[in-house]
Image (cartoon, rainbow, N blue to C red):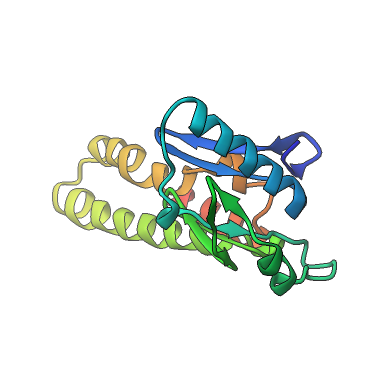
Length: 173
């Protein structure tokens, strides 16, 4: 079933190369997904790296926070290994928070800072010294836009208006 991020977007897993993130709306459904993943690994004769794995319980900030201690007691197993329960987790460079409303803000703000630094370098090294605008646009598309668009299909419906305004200002030059 996955996590419902918006009325039109529900995600059950994030997959990239040999990385996977399982998403579930309840702790019990996550346990079921972990069991399926464990059985899949047995069938196809591979193992997960438990040192790089964790459980993250995401909750809506308006609702009551789930009992992290209660979920830790019940545990989350992946191929028989108990996973730590964390409040934040970094997946493919994205720092994900357990609080749904602030889930992506930290990562997106880090990317905005990196994009601003790249933009300043382009302005100072290319435009101001040579006056060439064409190469600056190519560099902007290659080095600035990817930083602020990375993962935007997932995080854009969830970040605050202030974050989106910052991105708009950055893109406006």
